[in-house]
Picture 1: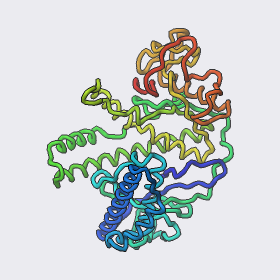
Picture 2 (picture 1 turned 180 degrees about the vertical axis):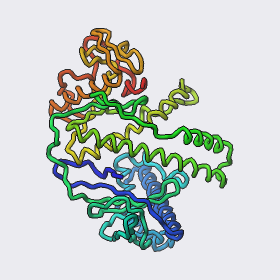
Picture 3 (picture 1 turned 90 degrees about the vertical axis):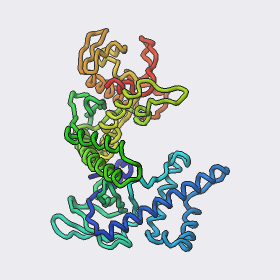
Picture 4 (picture 1 turned 45 degrees about the horizontal axis):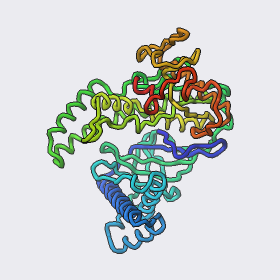
Length: 432
């Protein structure tokens, strides 16, 4: 499984992730749980300290917190259970999160909801050996040799190692430096594709291809719903409730793995054949916000909106975007995001824009020229045209200057119609 560490640039070396399933002894599993608990306590304490400083109008960053951590380890023995560089890396991650998102926007790490994990930043301290065709082992500080399932070669120099727990299983992830570089030029220059992400079909491309699959089987859906009903009747904090939550997590682990595999395969298929991939710049977090409202102003159609939110999140729109960005580093593909406004209402043939053009979820028929097409395919063609116009302007950033308005661009207010702009971004997504 491959993960993105940073966006690759032309001619730079690539960092990729390799994740394997661990086979820990009971003592090693207990140690990993202890390491993760200490890291969670350091994170929460450091976050509370930063917030307290901000309330007083002062600042706190990594350097003084690392010095205070060293002093606290002399007083509190339980802090010495985890390796020092692991705790320092936790503070570095906290510092980065606060800088990127804001101190009061960073979340606490809850004992119940947070998945245990910790990272060894020094890859030169990690030794890896292959034991056979199916097994390997790695030597981690204070853990010793740990066995893992050798499903693929590492393929590079180790930069860091992350140990995490998911649905009761422990995994080890190696961040390795590949020997390959991002190509200066795609193997098929001049090719381009627009992608429309929907709920009925996860991915529809401008060339008419449809990529979709079921991530949860009917049997798993029935079992998961029964577990949800059982969970609603159980007492919080009880052992039976923890077993139910664990059973639900095992089902969702399979669903998540299938979704990740689908996104990775689809992204690889698309970037291998296209030098330019155009996506809508969707605000998925805003699109999947709850419609409950407040006590004074309750929301409308809350259950319908909740079902739409589950459908959007179930298709993995953001995961596909990450997979495309990661796979594009290996082929030299450019990934461009364009404004999604009016892509579902505009005719690709004559550029006429009207809500009536969209007859149904599946059918698009232009009221001006009579052009008929699949609705998602027509939207994907509009997305591709907008991306080609942006690329022709030479500015591939989503926050480009407003003075550069490419000809034939789909986004913005159509001059001939004068219709009001739809509320929210991604108007095409609410109907899919």
